[in-house]
Image (cartoon, rainbow, N blue to C red):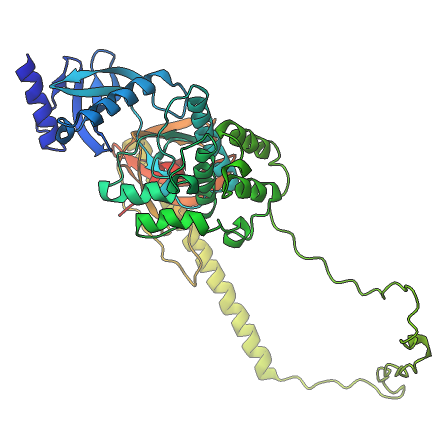
Length: 478
C-alpha cells in the first residue's frame, strides 16, 4: 500500500499533467498541477466521495529532507484549519502520504488582481474590505495569514476574492514580491506588530486604485530599503480625477513610516474602509477651481503713503460707435438670378433623393435577410452566410446589423461563467459557459454596483448567444 502511494506521488511530481489521473486514498482524483508555492505544490483534484472539485496542497518533494520546513508546513496546515472567513480557503482534509504532508481545501481559481489593472473606487473598496476582514479574523485569533500581495488575491467570482498563498507566481519573483509590501520596521530588524500588516494593506489599496505599485524596482534588497525613505505618492498625483479627502487621509495613515502613526490593526483599517463605503454617495470627482472674483478689495485702515485712487484722474470713457444706419431713401437691391445655378441645385437635390430611396431599399432588403437568416437558424438549425458590413467614414456599423464586432475578444478565465440578460448580478441567466470559451465584446463596458459588465456574443454547441458577462472574469484573447 505504501509503495502504491509513493508511486502516485512520483507521478504527480514528475509531470505537471499526469498521463493517468492518480487516485489518492481512494478518494481524491488528481487532474493537473496548477502551480507551486513556497512549501507545497498545488493540484486541482476531484473528491470522488462528495463529487466536488478541491485543491490538493502537497509538500514539495525536494523539501522532504528539511525537517524545519516540514514542521512549518504542518503548522500552517493546522492554523489554516482553525481560521474561517469567506475570503480564505476552507480546509476540508489533511494527512500524510509517502512522508509528505498534504492539505485539501476548497477549489478556488481565478485571476490575480495584479493582472486586472486599476479598479474603480467601488471595486477597490469591495475587494479590500474582504481582504482586510480576513486578516482581521486571523489577528483576532493570533493565527498567521497569507502574505499581502496583489499576486495573492484571486478574483474567483463576480465581486468575490480569495487571499491565498500564491502558487501562480514564479519562485524567482517571490523575493521581490515580498519586498514590495515589506513594512519599514521589518527591514530595520524590528518584530512585526498588528500595525505592520496595515502598512501592507495600505500599499495594496493604493495599487488597486492606481494600477501600479507605490514602490518599484528590480532588486529586492533595494526595494525593501526604499520603504525606509520613500514616501508613498499622493493618490491625486496618480489619479487626479479621483478626489476624496477621507481616502487620501486613510492612505497616508496606513502607509505612515512609524507603526504608532497607523491604524492599530487590520480590524481598525477594515472599519475605516467600511466608513468610506458608507459615505460613497458623496461626489468623488475633483471640482473645478472657482472663478477669480472681480470685486474691488475691501477698504481697510487708510495708508498715508498711498494715494487715494479716487483722487487719481480717471481715463475718459470712449462712447461705443453707433452701428451704421441705412439711408432712408435707399431701396434694397435685388441680386440677379443665375439660371444655370438654379438648374445645378435642382439636379443635386434630385440625385440626393434617388440615393436616399436606393439606400432605404437596400437597408430594407438587408434587414429582411438578417431576420430571415435568424429565423432559419432558430427553427431549422441551419446557419446561413452572414455578411459583414465595413465601417464607413469612421462610423462603426452595429454588430447586430452585420457590422464588424464592436470590441475586443476575450476568453472565459473561470470554470463556469453565467451569461445574463442584463448587466445585473440578479438578472436571469441565459446560459453558463465553460472555461476557455471565446467571446466577442459587442457593447459596454458598464459598471453596475461594483461589477464591470460587457455585452458579448458567444457560440456553444453550434448556437449563438448574446448577453452580459462580468469583465473581471474574462481574459484578453491571444
